[in-house]
Length: 529
Image (cartoon, rainbow, N blue to C red; front, side, top):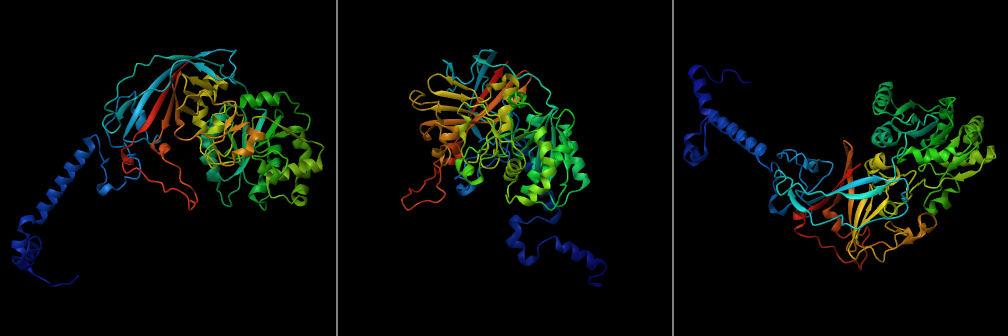
């Protein structure tokens, strides 16, 4: 700082001069010039007015961008600052739904009647329609346009809920990173919480702290999952080899009540342990047993061999586990198989007389993109895999219906002549009706479906967007003794799919210039039990 720049009155005059324009600029700046203190007051007042406006307007911070910016995408604002709606519909503004500013909404009530004679393999026929016209609801304007619908319930017959069982005789093992494990908490909670079954997780991260272990263990146990975290007993092994080496960890934590151990991936999902438990109860756990499923993809079977694939779940009797333990080190040295599943198969075949037994209903799902054909096939899966990587399915939300009616999960109900509900997954409306569609065949919605006749067939060709309109489940929520399911048909579902590598003959896709004005469509099912 320069000293002696001004003294006394000169200094005061100089400071005052900084807050006003010079005579040379006075005329030119007069219309917009305000002294510094007044400028601050005006700016503060303006800020208060703007803040008050945005906090009290229905479309706060939801303004349309100028110059048509954003016109190539649907208008999906955050409703964080908008006024709340009636509690009966305010849930539609949840960020997890990601709905457009305006939606076409309709609600249908379903009264579920438990019937022990229901054959879930048959498509239930309901004469009433399920999807109607709907009403326009403006979610950013206090849900204006919404009126409480007259919700006359449609009666359907469903199987009973699964009975409660103790599964403390079962132990599951997974080798993964601590981040991936935590990321899968909700799915583990869905099928493991309060079952008595034990989860052993070998953490393959190079660096982890005891604090991380304690925090993660506490988190899982707070959500009802009996978790034990371990570091690898042999840290020189690769991540894939840890899927085999975990056998020793499982045997070390087995108790006198342990009958079955299972090796899984962190994205293996069991809709319920009840159907699996019924299958295992029919087996003698004292006899060596190696059970699981091949990949649904025959190319994967040809490449990896005839073995149990870990993503679908591998099941070993405690008798076999005891036979294998002395040979684990030898198998790691002798076998030159990079995958843990392959190591296990080779070790079992070379060191024991046990052979592979297939369990129907376990699904490895080594195919990607759109698996709606599988989820709408009416099959009751015992396990699912790759649901958050190779394809996307909110499995922990989908399966919540099982709490009320057990095997009604993914059961099919036909409404009227054109609509099919695949319970927990989708509502499909067929433009030309359901007549003429062979629903005993699986719709081939994924690439290369022609090669899946042997595992998921018989197959049929996929329908186009014009022939089939789908509403997919985004959330299920238990409300007292009721269950609310939210199905959404998104604006993007009507857009033509882009080719990953367009050919010279490809027709360029023309986007709708008014795409941002289009609306998602919502069907809310309210189940009464």
